[in-house]
Image (tube, rainbow, N blue to C red; front, side):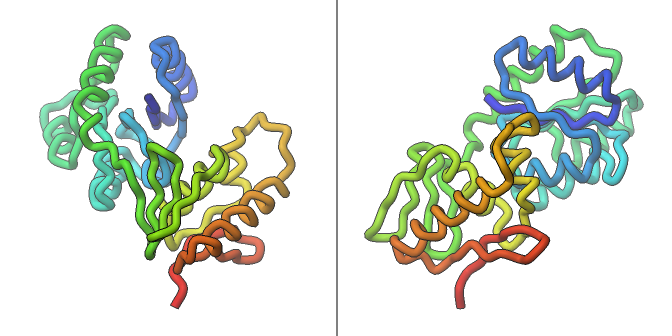
Length: 224
């Protein structure tokens, strides 16, 4: 299961990452509310752990924006704020649970487990853009009557593009999200996979395309 952790305190973020990885979760960490929003919109997480006091956007703002975009992943608010009004504001904004700092590690894990069990019913199995559908369980790209199975990297790239349809994704973002920050792969590997995906979209008769914006990145757009 995949967990997104957003906390601007490096030490706390490291502790959360270590705790969750020890429980065999796949964990991604960001350090501000804007990145939490961007990652939350771009990826399919089983749970999101949000600190409230963060730069760029606070946790409440990021949460409201995620819910406004119909992101249904369960959210645990984790913060030093413990007043009743803060708890109410967080829950009213769409949070599923609230845990004030300092916390017991066992309680954190127990709450995440409960949320991931509860959130399993919300996981989408397919993404749609234009006349194409991407089946997230089978890696199949469909445009009736055609169907083609994507490789792992191809699937991850197209999933990212479809979740952010109409929004630019830079080469560097693709590298970070899919190949990882420590990868030794060259940047031109992104162009190669974009080329593969373009050919496959064309082959099945898709009415969407992967467009490039020089110096900015790529986006999925519907053809007129």
